Length: 253
Image 1 (cartoon, rainbow, N blue to C red):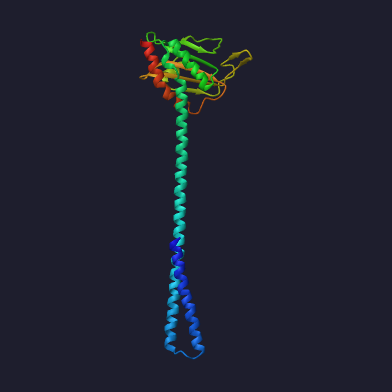
Image 2 (cartoon, rainbow, N blue to C red; image 1 turned 120 degrees about the horizontal axis):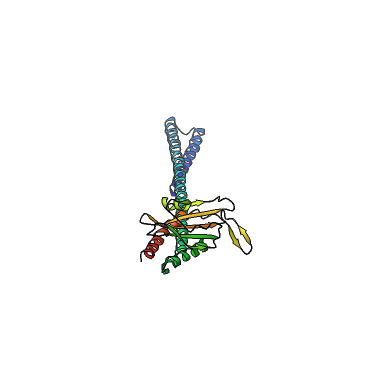
């Protein structure tokens, strides 16, 4: 702002001088009291003043354009920083949500002194955090290598699967692949939930493995009427390590 004001002053001063000199010059010419030589000098001075004004005006315009460019650049940098901050804040918020969910799933799991208690606590925590309506936990028998049903949550089925081997059935495939399976379009009546108000069929089924040192030692099946969170993979990745360590400890002691 100070630089622009300085340029404006420099433009005004020669302009006033030119006007004053021109007025005096014409006054002298009308009175026939001036010779041709001073006139030439005066004209030269006027033209020099005009060129100076043009130069200063150009500098003023150039400075204004530069300032505008700097303002646009600063505004762009500010917007980019604000955008990056919003992205970072959103990511931090997502991390906090994932951390809170994983802590809820792991809540009180260390207090389990046997696999039955471990399974019951886990299903209870999953019901609170993910609003599941059914759940089953299968744990691997380290001798027979079969996965045996240990605990259930609100479970009802005409065909109750007590145990399965690695690769057998959908759960066996999850155990073999060591990867979570999230099914969002479960066929009607594939799963049945009973209550005092009637019965229903959850449309969402989630089966995830509990893996200890590259070996599946547990399978958890849960179902819900609503979709599981979009970040469920990240949540269970965090919980898997502590769940597997605790479960392996119970299996080997």
